[in-house]
Image (cartoon, rainbow, N blue to C red; front, side):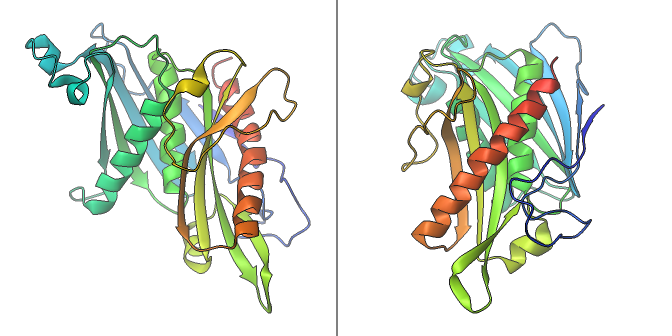
Length: 273
């Protein structure tokens, strides 16, 4: 098991939160890889990702021959495109049956996985990701996307870069509607109290690898500028927001997410050293 203690805050001037956490500091993170390998010859990987009170597992199977392709029906595979990889995602709640929320998570995770798959991934195949929610206390989507990312890497599925996801919440200061308080990795109580919650997945890759040709999971996304992190470049591959914020507030959240994702990337890379 690899654990990540509270990361250094991007800005530590604000008062602390529950657990004496700074406004822009990560919750403690624990990650365990290789939980469910069955040794059946297929490319598989799995991970358990715990961030504060939120914990999920992700299991990856594939790439496997798409059933429609095995039956000789090329048009039925990958929505009629025989050159792409089909991504299937199943999200299971803590208890009971999957509902609308789980199906929405499935759609977001599937689009995220599709956006980070490398073009070298065998066409006419299916990659299946199963996410089990074990406990929940805010920042669920970020936790699920990070779990899926490291499970894909554990499975050996080729990706076109290194993805890292963070969640940012914003609340307006009393008496100052233009002044926002930013919270990194909010818990459930903070999410309920904030006017805006955003989840941002960044993909870090070396320039010239062709990753910019991918379809991104957000209509308004555009590649971000190189932050000077060596030869690495980053772009947003997923952005989902709940609530409302001013234009300046939205840009502030995005800037904080970009900085925090660099820290998350460094941790995720340490898992595979």
